[in-house]
Length: 290
Image 1: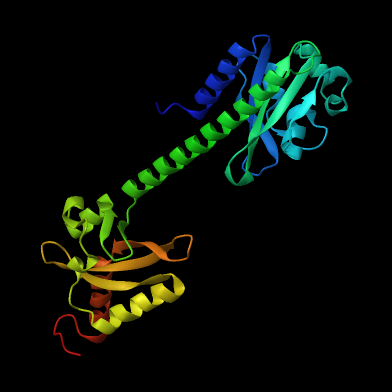
Image 2: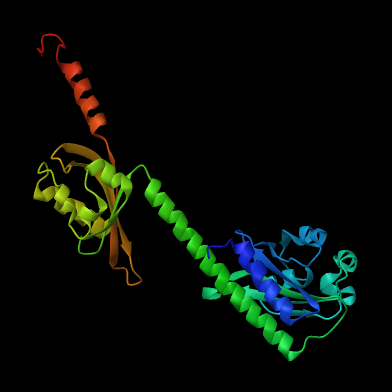
């Protein structure tokens, strides 16, 4: 339903709390530096407690969650007030009426640490086998949600960048057939998205470059993975235009080209201005004489 990550994580917490009825749960997320835990969801823990632990540095003996993230293993603290992991946090735990805390690291694909899932009890207590199974399942579910949501957000961001970019973008398959183009491509060339899908980019060829030019271009792409330079192409209406073009190859796991991406901008006005300056430098403007 395209809900924010915080809303989804809170729904997981509330679902676990319905099963573990005398507990309050918390999800903390690892920051981009991989050094601190940030508030993810804890709707039934006191606000002042959530604010206090937001940004806690992971490390040994930094509470249940900080230690679980640091060691990448489950941490069971049956009595917060007497456990050494909580020696710096006993006062706020007491104020928050928290007696026990069991924390499970949230591990994603490629063994990547994403955060922690914790179950708090108001009184010192030991977890049952069912509770341990529950916290493990909750952490796995949170990992799936976090990774999928972040991947979805990245895809949406890429799509927005693709659509609003002020450069034309063209993507082809390994055989050179066009897979997609962005709106600026159509604005520059006059060809619509539907008109070019499945076609070869040579539909834009101007005829101003010989075979050797394109051979050198693709040799550079094959050996270096990219090419950058100026190209004259032809719009749908036949008008010639100059473009600053960069072509890059996207490789698969076997280091073979999977797609080719071309980014270009129309520099025709720049080329015309250069020609005008060269004319003024070498010819009299009025008489046209050298």
